[in-house]
Length: 173
Image (cartoon, rainbow, N blue to C red; front, side, top):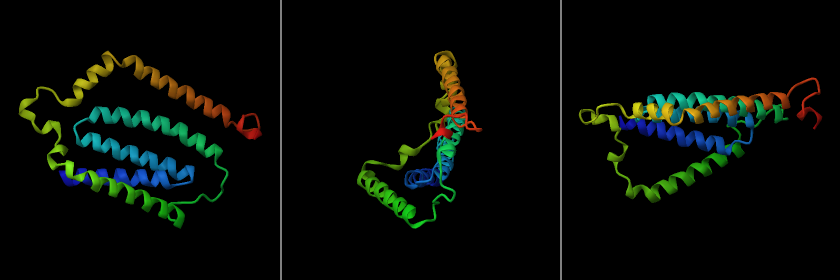
């Protein structure tokens, strides 16, 4: 079980290094979606299944807006991918920095800190994420609806900016 968590966290760090080192917005948006999926997998592994589902759906809505905006602004017909040497050099540099900082702080970590809270099942009456769901809908329901509204308005603003037929704002640039 801990090996799966290590695999997910390694994929998360590798994906974040790939996003940070990539100059092309196409591959960076794709990398962000993959990192969001892996991050939600880490949340699921820790017992927050509903939280990870909501986070993934809202994050994918935001990434749709970011991808539409970055695809409209990208002017390169052949973007530089993850296999090119400058991108690989940056990615290896970021990974080396993460590994060096990780080894610096690894003496204060221990393996029991990765245990899932639901493994102590005999002491809990409800799952850990179900209490958060009740709080989300009772106290945070307004902010959830406000976040959905902001993402929808942002999507329409980006679509208006990138509209064709030389009527959009970005086409005049």
